[in-house]
Length: 350
Image (cartoon, rainbow, N blue to C red):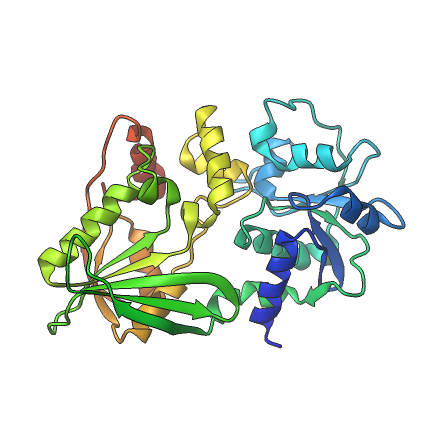
């Protein structure tokens, strides 16, 4: 079985609250564990905790060097750290309700650091808080994989077209929807082809899924307005492709995006909220988008974006961006701070 499929099975196990093995070390996700799973994992002795560098910085367990969070941190398990206490340690959105934590004693990772980093990466990819019980008994049936399989996951997807059909929309009656599927990933990405090829590179928008903005009309972001504006621009241009990518919340998932919203309500900006949760400010990988474009026979594009990272990501994956076209829509009093953070901290050209 390929490393990519092993990583997909491990991600599924974590979401179900089951332990996994990475390079022979047992990991049980704090967020999805229950009392029975933890009791089994703790046999014959209590497992330690593993948290991300950014979370460790918040808990004053690690230093920040040049404002870059340190690597994973392992905490020796104290008798008072039950499942509820571990959840409070893992989730910064609970800090106001559980302000007193510690004292803690950290444990060196030594040769286990690659496995620890891989576990945290896999948690992020699974939409879970990057926090684990570590070193316990995973059991004979646990999914086992190498750390390298997690590192290579984005670059080993066997993405293919699963189905396609005509889809007239309110923006363009001549449109086709194309669904993509990968054996190693449960996410199903979609392309909307607007108009017809005319010899020019298509106007392309990489749009990350946003339930709150695209469907519920949230004013906290500009996603819904960007989605509508992009399709309308493609219809006006006569030829374009919208890639609708299942990367909610810049790749941190819906639940963690809502946790980030809660932190924003406490005064943190978008970037700091993501970092406090143990994620990067942007967890997306645009290799999938590049593969979709290649499957559609398009290796040169006019990219509709304000985000230079998207253009760089496509170029790195073999798609030539011949032009970067700005998209400026959706400003309102509720998202002014969000848009300012995009510009000042994420490099968007607004």
